[in-house]
Image 1 (cartoon, helix red, strand yellow):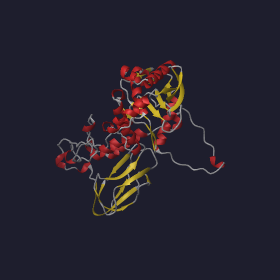
Image 2 (cartoon, helix red, strand yellow):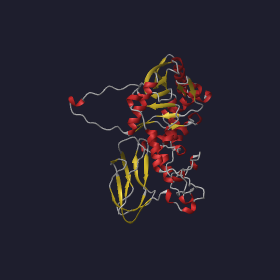
Image 3 (cartoon, helix red, strand yellow):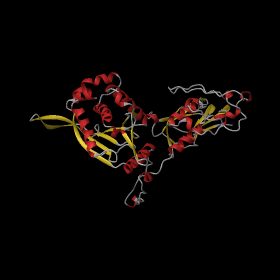
Image 4 (cartoon, one colour):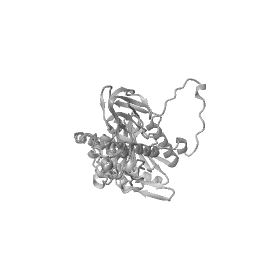
Length: 434
C-alpha cells in the first residue's frame, strides 16, 4: 500500500504557506529526514524534511502553490516504502544505557541522528527531564534544524514523547503557541469600528495580508498606541563627509560591503548612544523604571519584496565603518533572500531607517517598540548656504528623530540631534571625541 507524506504543522499563524522549491520528483528515492520542500515564511525559507522513505510515485504540489498543514505533498509506491521508526521501538537491550545526542553543526549541514538504541529505559512511564543546555536536549538533527528555523529554544519545549526526546510535533507546537498574537485592534488599545460595505460603490478585490505585513501592522499599531511620539526634524551638512565616503568606498568594497552615507551615519549614531544613554533605553511603566542598556545594538530597517524587516547589528559602537558596511550589507541580503534568522532580528536598542534611495525629506518614523527612539534619513540635496559671509553651495541630509516623550524631553532630543549634526558636518570630531 502506498504511503503518503503530508505537510506537518509548522507553527505559523497563517492560513497557507507558499512553496518555493519541490526537491523530489516521481521515480526518485527519498529518505527519512531528507529535505523535500522549501517553504516561504515571513522571515526565512524553511526546509521541510521527510518522515517517510521509499520511491516517489506522485508529487501533488508545485513551486508557487499555496499549501496548508495536512495537505498531501507526495505519495510513495512499492514494498520498500517505510515510515520513520518511533522512539518507542528502541531495542529492549538499551534499557540501562544513557542517552546520547548528536550535535547539529553550526553550518546547517546534516549530522548523524542520535540513535534510539542508547536511549533511557523503554519501560519508563514518564519522559526524562530536558537538560538545561540546548545542546544537551535529546533531539534529532532535523528537529534541531526546524527549531532554529522557527526560533524555538529547545530547553523550553515541553516533551510529549518517550525518553525525554524532543519531536518535531513538540517544536511546531511550541512555535505555534509563541506566535499567537493579539488582533491588531487589540494592540491599538481599542476596537476598530466595522468597515462599510465598499461594494456598494463599485467592484473591490480582497487579498490576504502576507504574514510579514500582518506582523508589521500589529507591531506598528502597538508602537503607536504605547509610545507618545515626538518628532524633531533638522538637516546635517554632509559636504565634507561625502568626499570622504567616496574616497574610502573602495576599502569597504574589498571586504564585501558598501560604504554608504547611511552606514557612516549608523557609526555616528552608535557613538552618540554612548554619549546619550537615555536614547539607548526602554521604559517599564509597571515598575516605573527606565532600563538603560549597557550595549549598543542597532536595528537597520531594510525594504524587501515581502515588506519591511529590521535586522540587528550587535555592538555597533565597537565596530569601524568598514566592518559595519560589511555586516549591514550581509544582513540586508539575508532579509531580501528570505534567509535571515529570528535571532538576527532581535535585541536592537535603537533603529535607523533610510528613505534616501527613494525620495522625501522629513517624515515621522515610528519608534520600534520597546525602544525609545528612531532616526530617519531623507534624501540628500544641495542648497545655498551662508559660510563666512559668502553664499556657497552645500549638500545637506534631512534627519527626522522620533522619540518617546516619557523618557526623553525635547531639550534632550535637540542635544542628541545636535551632536549627530556636528559629527556629520565635521567628521574629525568623531575621531577626536568618539
